[in-house]
Image (cartoon, rainbow over the protein chains, first blue to last red):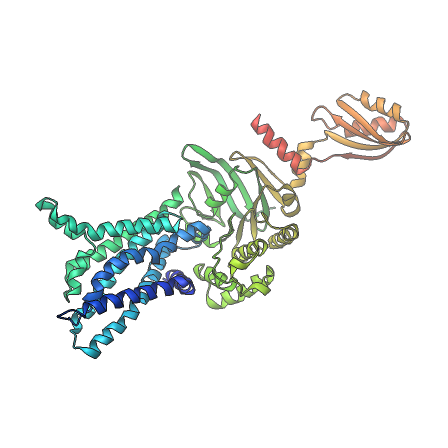
Length: 237
Length: 317
């Protein structure tokens, strides 16, 4: 555990020492505010955060890979992976440390949107439930996206390559539910269940459905598992 | 050398990359406190061997033990004993020297007090005082190399594995680095790879020469050069009439060639014998019999370059 914290802490410090952190936070804060304002400026405005959370799934399909692309790719490029893998560390401690750091960067990106929630309370009387479940569900969705990004980062020493791979996987998993209209009736449910964004919708309405929760947990654990395997396989090449 | 403690024990180590054997049946041991040079041309298998020893990758066959711990079955414990400087110095360019060392101390399980003490120690040993708060990315190659050595010795490992530690740094820093490594011997066991031959004779107590993945020689640098040259080339200073001395020397059976420099009365003769036979006594007797003055008789030792070439050349032919 101490090893994991050491790695996570190092990554967090590196991330916040780079301009990348502030660019992502600023760009996302801007986009979220834009979607928020347009969602409450309609004829029948709704005092909820769905207005920016739903489009945020698409934004994070693109942003999550950027948050994670450095994590393992750069270690391979600098040769520091050799340093980590010859230190008395278990492979999963390395992966977990990096993953925790990625989650911290995700949370830091979401924090400025609390300001929008404050505005809701100032000017309206929103329902607190969907706001909490919305953030909770979005965190699960984000964490799952980061696990894809971390896995992609273990595949290449080129950050751009790993980001593109992760974006590809995440986009596919986000839009796969659209295929429900075309596939045979037996596959509709399967295609819907595979979709990363589909499982988020209930959360955004204020519902915590265990099968959505389990989906995200299994999805994330599986990707972390294959990331550890991917790292391990470097020893066997 | 009774009960000499063995720090690195390599037995029949083999590693295949696909069908290609990078190393085959490599065996050698390194005693505690010893500095062993690991010598071989590029691609001989030095880095592969070191990566197996450090637990970066497993061998295809054979065993390796670090301070008694098997690098495969007791990998974590073995890794704890090792300080490792890979060929490309693994540095986080956006960290400061202190932060970098602190991070490595943490992942090697050093507690705060020990870390703080050792960080200031190694910064002193590697003479990085002026740069301890600098970003590593801003340091020159020589200083980066020093940071690399600092991280390798940070946790006071029993065994140090250094892959080409003096490559790509300027000559003054090369000398400094070698002194540093020499001072580490005794306390630490050092395995040092290089393809720079003088480095081995200045730093190492023993040499393993590998070529195409196999050990071709293991010994002390001086013994290696004596053993390989035998008495095949001898230099003699003789006081006596040059033409007669020349012909007398040529008459000794087993001598292939004699050449001479100096004046007619006192000359230095270079003698090459054909076989592996030691002709020193025969030469001395002959000269004394004839009543000439024998001032010096010395076998010419092969330099490490020559040994290296002859060994690796023999392998190929």
